[in-house]
Length: 117
Image 1 (cartoon, helix red, strand yellow):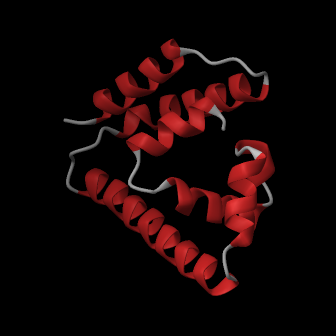
Image 2 (tube, rainbow, N blue to C red):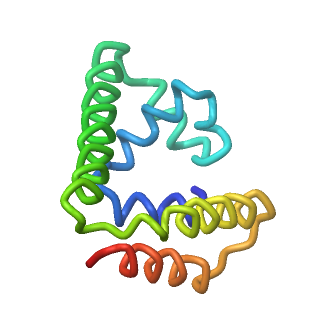
């Protein structure tokens, strides 16, 4: 599995299975997960995968609302949004090159902490 994806999942409110289900929709599952993980999600009944996807979508939606709420009540600083997008893009590029950097994850943590009041 992609080491960045693994770290980001650990720090998010989604489970690995939920992310696998979302990746299977976007056809990126083979890019991020090893063949054993792919086989496991594909072996599940479609109704079960559909339920997992619904839970994942709900969690993502709630996370986005929490993000909006943070800005609305002044708890998040908007000037860090571009930094957040840039580090996400950098992490994606490093992953595509097969390079893992603890520093990149530390930078992500720093940006997220800096966004909080």
